[in-house]
Amino acid sequence: MVAELTADGATTRELERMMAEFPDLPVEAVIKQDILRQGLAFSPDALRVASGYKPKDYFIFTFDLVPVAEMAEHAQFRAPEEIRMTGGPYDLRRTVVSTRVAPDSPYVVELRDGKLALNCEGVYLSDLEFPPIPAYYEHSLSSGKKISQIAPAIEWGYLVYLTVYRLCQYWGRDEECRFCDLNENFRQQRAAGREYTAVKEIDDIVEAMTLINQYDTVTKAYTVTGGSITKKLDGMREGEFYARFAEAIESRFAGRWIPKAVVQALPVDEVQMLFDAGYRVYHPNYEVWDKDLFSWICPGKDRYVGHDEWMKRILDSAEIFGPTNVIPNFVGGVEMAEPHGFTDVDQAIASTTEGLDFFMSHGVMPRFTTWCPEPTSNLGRQKGPSLEYFVKLLRAWRDTFEKYNLPVPPGYGRPGAGNAEFSVSAFMDVIRTH
Image 1 (cartoon, rainbow, N blue to C red):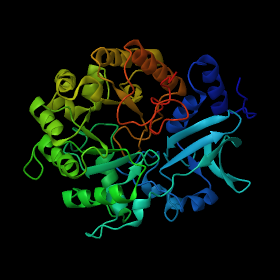
Image 2 (tube, rainbow, N blue to C red; image 1 turned 180 degrees about the vertical axis):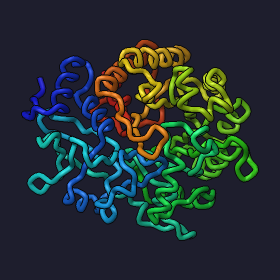
Image 3 (cartoon, rainbow, N blue to C red; image 1 turned 60 degrees about the vertical axis):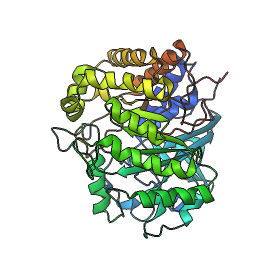
């Protein structure tokens, strides 16, 4: 039995209810999902401490519940990329959680007896650490650009995240995925006066990776990603454009990192380009399973490719990469988005589980990020799904994963509660390691 918090707020009661109803899920995973769902607030003292640690680099989306312009208190002292919880009344094992800034969250990072702590509704929940600044951040690129802007590290340093194209050619409300603020994030970062390159140069990427190879021992994988290319970019189709980056890195540092590509579900010839360039994990994200919701939530993807063809392309790519190296992401919870999403939790879970079963029965292993209703996205400032939804989603994911006896997903670090580095959902935390 774990100890209980002494507070009696709504968040605490729901945490306790979910822990009691799902005792086979790690307590850490339940709390992690709720923090991702509701975001984090920071006291002024905690933000001052954060200035000595790795800040949010806004590497692709904002993942915040308020616009950058409304974060006046964060202008000088930026929130950390992630937090890592330990101890507290639940004796939490080390749990890494992505920071999603939400000033009104019941989860508040403060100082407790001079040390970082996380409170829930005013009651102590855990000790905290902020991520250290990677050693390679101290070095500069010959172009004058900050290395943190070209090759930021996330997941407590495990992953180098290379967003090489920071815009998307699905443009405007009739094409952009409704949960996505990639284009708007680009505008926000530029408006805030931050260096934010739209299309990164291969020379900058290679120089950054050279410095990481020289000065860093923590990174184990890199992701190359960016917005979708529906026509051409620099005269190249999407597969051609993204293939060049792995080719440049792997020709110099073959085997140093696990190379991952997060792009569209591409035709087979372009998937082959990615594999031949050196990528070994392919993430053709399908966002949401339900066919009607796919059409509404991903109008550009539906118009240019279509639901059925998108899912077929994912399975086709398994012939090239191998099924367990195809790991399409879906946006956990977006199937309950208003006004057209599911209104019943169990119906939403049943729909998503159908998709999990479809892919996992073929050896393909979907994973999810936790939907964060970013206010500048088309879906706007609506309230996301309940904690019950996310806990049931974790159970459904793990049960389907175990049903097909699938291996640990490559490129995500260590599995299991207390080990997982993946920070934007608890799917790695719920994998049973023994």
